[in-house]
Image (cartoon, rainbow, N blue to C red; front, top):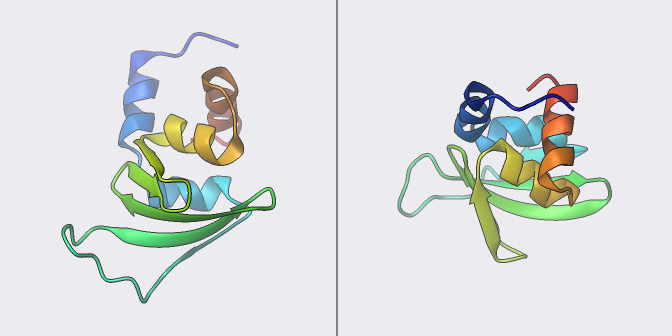
Length: 99
């Protein structure tokens, strides 16, 4: 795998989690009944990734898995979390997907 450039990492860190989720999940659907309390940009998503179910709250590049009680920020963190990958494999997947 080639070296990861800082510009690529910056782009991945800024990518909205909800947009990425639709690309890396087998199924992803925004919960239209969810009403955010603090940030108006917060959304709740239900997703299936390789047979695993997730309920994620997203706000920009940040995400929080309500069932696991864990979150993170940026595309690499989200891919690592939902696909159970290490950093190197997550960045390779993002590149394969053209993200």
